[in-house]
Amino acid sequence: MRSDWTKHKLSHIIDIIGGGTPKTSKEEYWNGSIPWLSVVDFNNSNRFVEKTEKSISEVGLKNSSTNILNQGDIIISARGTVGALAQLLNPMAFNQSCYGIRGLEDHIKNDFLYYLLINTVNNLKRIAHGGVFDTITRKTFESIEVNVPPIDKQEGIASVLGLFDQKIQLNQQINETLEAIAQAIFKSWFVDFDPVRAKLRANEEGYDPERAAMAAIAGVSLEKDWRNIDDDLEQKLANMTEAQRDELKHTASLFPDEMVDSELGEIPKGWEVIRLEKVIEIHDAKRVPLSRREREKRPGSYPYYGATSIMDYIDDFIFDGIHVLMAEDGSVMDDNGKPVLQYVEGKIWVNNHAHVLNGKSSVSDELLYLFLQTVDVKPYLTGAVQLKINQRNLKSIPFLHAGEEVFKVFSVKIGPLFTFILQNEEENESLEDLRDTLLAKLISGELDVSEAAPSFTEAR
Image: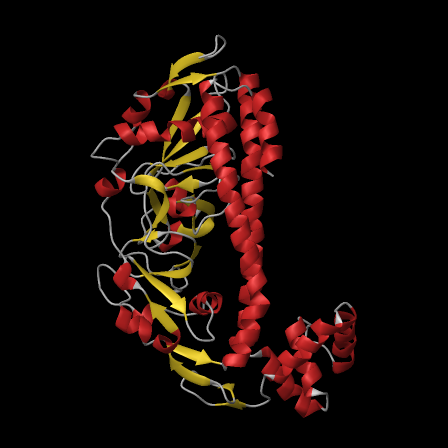
């Protein structure tokens, strides 16, 4: 420890704030203007948490034991997924499975405290009360001693490490945008049938149906008269290469100009409703669950996936390449009834709580992933206490097959988006590794801020 650093019990330099949950039976306590945090909102690699799945009302706040954390305060999960950390971008309430942490101004700044806690969390896990790693209590914080530099050095350390987290979060935001673009294209083609409906309208109103479909595919708004639509399409075409214009024209020709009835309602003529089992491969037989104790004996660098996220890192892998993971039991759907999915790449291990899927034939993994995001899984669930979607029900989900050529063109169109997503994820892994290496050295005083600053530029 450097001479100007001081040693403290962690509990002596922070405020520990408890949370709570308003009664779920009281509708007036919920869906208000106050964000309400639970671990599901911050159980990822993001430093910052900005929004929550659920919110409470002022009445709910007054009639519960929860508290409001300030912008910049820290949240740490104390039960379940213990030790997950994040820093708040907005004031939020939170549940009783977490603690709010706020640095005492005279001793420690929240930005530095966040990194200090990351470095300390393994110690918190080791001494957590109630088994191998089941619970963090207030006494846990009293058991930890930390070395703290002067305020100016705290700010310098937090600033250097913050550069990594800013870049990581920017990449994640880019990935969210890229996936949203892919989702929008999928919805336009295979849910709303925009190119087909554009042709139908064009036929009725005397406009060229192929150009109408081209406009729909190119993203031109069809909420106008045909003259304006045509002008907008021409502007789009002027910014394309000849090859891109030819590709757009070919894609438009693949869509029919007629709708027919089906079990799913009206669908484009020539498209077929089949069972999902015809276009997927299921690799569940290769899954191997490992208990927490078994994983602790096998630390490594390969992600160990559960139903909703990475649970651990171990010394071996079962699967390699791109896969779509779909939660099988437990947390199987979101608040909108859509399945919990993970699009993963690389060497991984998966337990028995997630189906491991690939598309086959003309159905790419990316197309399968986007399709499953549109499925209402409630009719396919079993179990009263623990919800589950078994293989039989998974295979029975109706799937609208648009034909091999349409699917191939779609997959070529969205492929670069997912390639970029994977590149950003790979870059983030490298940034996280370097950040964590620097973090340990900076927090221990082994490395000075002036020595660490160039590392971020080199990492980029």
